[in-house]
Length: 153
Image (cartoon, rainbow, N blue to C red):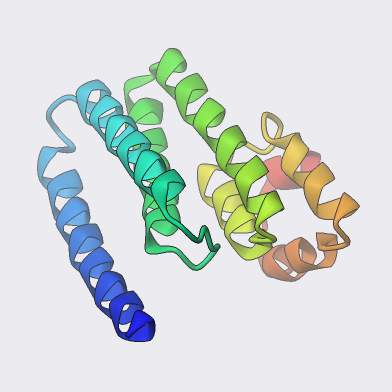
């Protein structure tokens, strides 16, 4: 029964992500700032729902959805040059990183780092991965990438 519910929730998340992606591209020319703030607010709602769950697991669709929303919000704030919004996303990312470390969600932690692309500001993720002996997972992920900012970090 639980397995079926997870499959259904996963399917619903795919639908939501596709909808968000469509909205993102439709409204992208409108107001980046407003869209970014709405995405962060929605991410906060998913955080609250995740924390209310009886069993918090790294495979929770709510956690993945929250990460995706922050990635899109960051893109909006970058495009609008809204520094406060970028800082807001990074603050949320720090809280997620602590949670992912507690849940041993290192793959999602690397996704968060790589897609937010704020390597110098997120140096704490490198520390988390190194201290938990999962730094090699990051190295495997970036072995084919050529990002100068990542090399500098």
